[in-house]
Image (cartoon, rainbow, N blue to C red; front, side, top):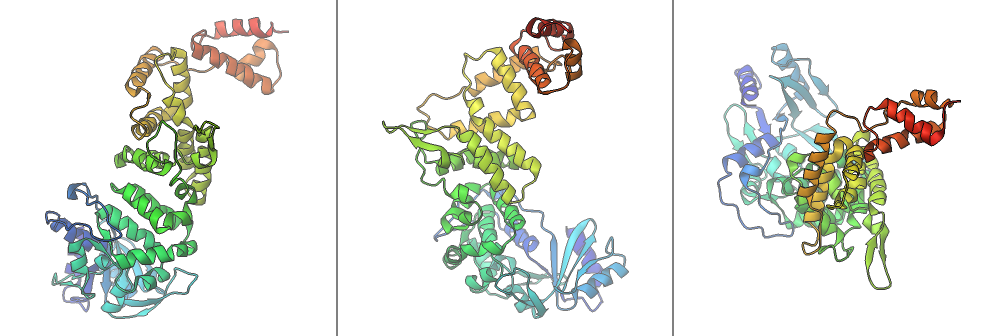
Length: 478
């Protein structure tokens, strides 16, 4: 990144742009945070308090470089291209006074200082040229308004609040938060995301405005909401972020199925309500294990709200909640425009999480082979999800022995190494052996042979014995 900025500095020295270019936004913010990572952080003291993470664990996002200038950004982009600095012709947006260029493989956004105004139903602003102060006041939070002169290194805090808020670890809008969130409601999710990722507190006025204006998310596209939601979910402080989404009413706007889990009591196998249990489960899944497993942990019990029943003796049950939960997860993720592959993987893991949890030492090798076959490439994720689920349950109740299950799986896998747990005969070979025409019966016969392989009564790949078994069960050909 420093190389990119150095190139910009050098090519503009002595030009009309010298002294008029400013680094702004996330890159500058994160630089200043990293330089002060050893400073003692204050105690949280407001409605939006969040745990302060170890600075070494805070993952700074790979931000694009944002440059604001007093002038025409599109002309500046063309200047850079004509001076062989940009790797390709710039992409310009004259209506918004912005341009995108690539320098040394790094994306750089150029913005002419501007004013913005919004219509109530849209996040797309009307823009007009403005001063540097106009430009920083249109931004989301004070910590993103700092400006650093690219040539002199001087840092400008035009709001008079940014440096203090960065030091005090505060998320605050640069102007009335109701105006900021009215203009762009997505900023409410960004407030929660920044607070969760950086371990900052949300200023009481900003927090109150989020609670008041959560309904404004209705004008934001599902894709934008999904992207912010994923970033929150992939924070070390994700559980705080999710709880804040619920408390402010934001979660209800785009994932009411999750919000509904709060306060749903469970049976003797649990010590938490469904929502708290879910957050505890998520805490056991490391960020490094990926979004699929994190989503699966978040959604694994989403079916419990719909399936909760209470017997006459007061016993609580959640019959088939894994099946119902998989269906609800599909619906929620489709609404947020997740990919088909992501949806299917998450739904599958939800549908499997009780299956793994039922393991005990009475399971036969055949039962483990069935699990291996059914889980396929998702077996390890299914085990990890169950492991996290059980870690968040009642520790005084019997639970699955994950170590024993892994050992049993290892033993069975060694025995079947290089062998396929499928029917030795193809559909065509079955038809030839029994003299049958194509039809549904062929699939059933094939499933029978596969079952025999799994049960250990038919060796994988043994076509001769498979044909003998078919003749014995279904009769000879002709």
